Length: 269
Length: 218
Image (cartoon, one colour):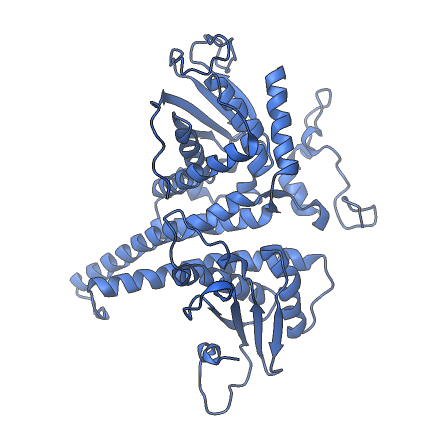
């Protein structure tokens, strides 16, 4: 399957071989100049082989800088929200009292906001990436198909390997295991080496978001929880061992537990 | 293209082909895009977003340069002109797989409006920091391809509000060049995302930094 441009039977616009030069010096200006490389790329089906590439390092450095950047922006958003609440209070409107305002509470709120942002960035990327990847493949008919696709193609696109193990209880719960989860390997940050647990805390939400976003875009509403060896205080290779627990929204709850997906993770399997 | 420019281009192509660990450009674009959007939501101030992108870029740039030097084996530039050529043909090529056009402005030309590349007053490629007159030396990078902005469309208020979508590049260049003793002020002049005709990133040389021991790196 070496073709890069679609053949005459495709749905694409008529092929334009030199989109940048379609108004040559001797030709009068025409509306074909509206077809920029951008619009052309949007109109054609996206051939997997023509996927443009960049060096991996800028992406890795971008990821490395994301937490600090988002923490700063989260602080700004928190400040703005608090100022708004104060204004409302002063204006005489009833306002829900803030639970506590100590430094510890502030730090906790900041962490929560950072985590939410890491996850949200992940979700947006995950959704778009899943859509792109699934476009040229046969349709995914069942939730299990979706999960298998994520465990293979999606995982490879992001982390250059497949998931190491997928289990399900056939009642809407899926457990994905990656023994060498790439984001947790070779950990180093621009701000000095931090413990594996701290790294995991910051980057796992991003990965959870990637997965959750991909699932949602592929039609599967689910909650996703991750746990890694790093969180349990383990050392050595198991630091990078990560498990994702996916619970599909319509799944029946296990008898009597009323538990959230987080509790499933606590069970050592 | 001059002989050295060809060499730089060949060097850039070589690093890209042989010494690069590659990922999908879309993944990079999407990640950057989601980040910018989140920053816009949080700061609600486009000037502030520009500033934060610059800051983030700076941190990325100071690390990127180490990798650049290790992988490209490019020796020290003899003048700022060469810096511009190397940034475009080797730097951009090996990291983003694009090669912006370079236009040199040495601030001394009196040509009508358009940038001219009048011959540099620098003599041979001496490795010493022979400081040429800093008559506003600048180079422009004309990005006709920009992985950061693929498929991006700016809403009108972002355009009017002065957002430079790819402002991280300003920081990256500033940080990277600072680590090789060049204090620069990069800035966007125009961006096709804002409806301009081209995307131009101009880099002004502020001064040569004195040689000093590199900061302790731990």
